[in-house]
Length: 332
Image 1 (spheres, rainbow, N blue to C red):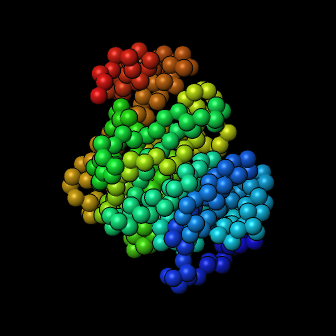
Image 2 (tube, one colour):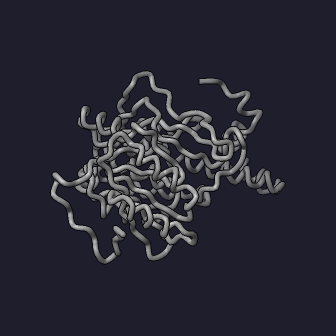
Image 3 (tube, one colour):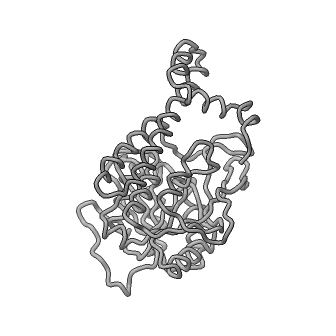
């Protein structure tokens, strides 16, 4: 069944026999999505891949379906968590077992376009890069259509450093780069002992990439959109997707910022620490704006007014995100 138990990690293969790319997929109650996501791997023009599919304590038939795929294709390896532990823990389990030169994430309700792996590996190897990001297509599951894409790049390939990555989280940024799914040099992950932070279930991709860049990873953005991302709410249909989503906790990103600042206080340069502190300020403002929206929705006007008076910047940000605020906002 190509199943790996927690007590039996797979030994490292000789370099010549390792796959080019290890694809990591955390799975939780995703039976209905697997034909599309795994099917997109079968369609890849680069066939030298392995899939590490980790069942994270699913209550449906996810694990059984994964085993069926593994029986049919030896490139698929199934791992099972003992209990639901979240996407970070599941992905770390897969990273520990991965054998490929490169690793990348495929969420179970998303898919790759056929040339994605070949194109990203070629770009990474040609540029001697540690991290490669492609553009992302937005998929409305209910309407079954593509509604847009994430990046607007002037050149086919542009460098990405720590400042540009974190600045994508600034207020009114058109897109946060932390949503992108990069191709990562597995040796870089191993050398610097970088893994997903298992104590968070939100923004875990942002934190992983931030740590890679703080360790000096060479990175680039590609203009081609080759990852199809199923949005939580369809831009065309207005309906929620059926994929499992983590409950939003606005303070999570503040905690994340505090962790990064503490962890890299002695090794990051002053400019990087200053950027992290700005990032934290934005997250505090976003958290306050989130609670303003909650109070308004609940018609709890007293706490809303007190919070707005105490944090006027958050109140202005919240107002700018309303329908009328978006209409009045200056265009970039």
